Length: 418
Image (cartoon, rainbow, N blue to C red; front, top):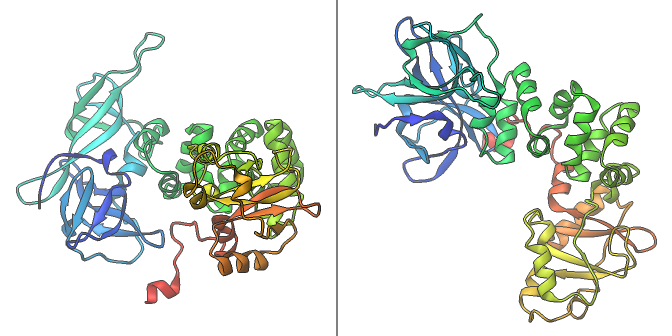
């Protein structure tokens, strides 16, 4: 096995490859086992494979570990990971743990853990990256130090909760989907602690990638003001779906605390049945006048916050240009804009024959339309032909897949049996 010292925080979300170079999954945690003497030994990794299932990869099946990738022998046990007695997950249970120095110099918190293989190919915890207790100055932070496992011992009672702040730092660069999966893999109490420490925007991103049951469990214990701040940072359709799961009196209290514009969008969506175009749509489509040029249209699409599905087309309407707009005129697809000079007006190249969805259209009709025309987004109009939103293909998939498809332990029986 190729060896080098590796800090496990850099392994979060790291790709795992087989000998042929095919990616088999991503690292979700490092599993170690305590010994009566000496540092913990690495026994394996938890890896998320397609289907969002967590499996155990024995360290004996690992050829090399690098911060950017992990190479395996290609043999992976596809059974779901189950933690055994004596095993500890580094991300979930070790990073953030408070430790005491044996020399009496005080306490510290684990911010990172280094693992390294010996001459026999056995991987052990070789070093801890620790931060001492905060300095006495007002804005001071504790000094960071390196130490061997043998130099410290856990503070307080066994199982003392970790510092969520340090675990969040380890997850700071994860994609929202990966962050959500990592949070769901934590013990229930730990999951709540981490969620409470996340910023409103980061928590909103993660919640959008979780099953509704877990969303409710995380937010249920938070005060209404914090919940409102988080929902302000979510897409209105996702916020509406989540609020619909709360008791009506609490939902109304939260809506009153939200940003007025965001709350208006959510209330508008809640007025529709959840399995209709109005209940599925986003209320913030890309809208332009017929006089808007191709150059201006492409500038709208280039904005970072626009998702690929939403950027597939621009809706052309009469004023006003916020939903509900004036009369819907047509759409201009992104590829079509690329084929015309920058000064071309969208009204001259729009597809006026594109049939929008009625806001009361049922889910079955929406799905058939997407499948028949190979679309990624569809405009939604009311009975007065005013544009009220856009339904994207991911909105449709969210409502057609099984309710627990976002759960990291969800299994597709037919796929696994193939």
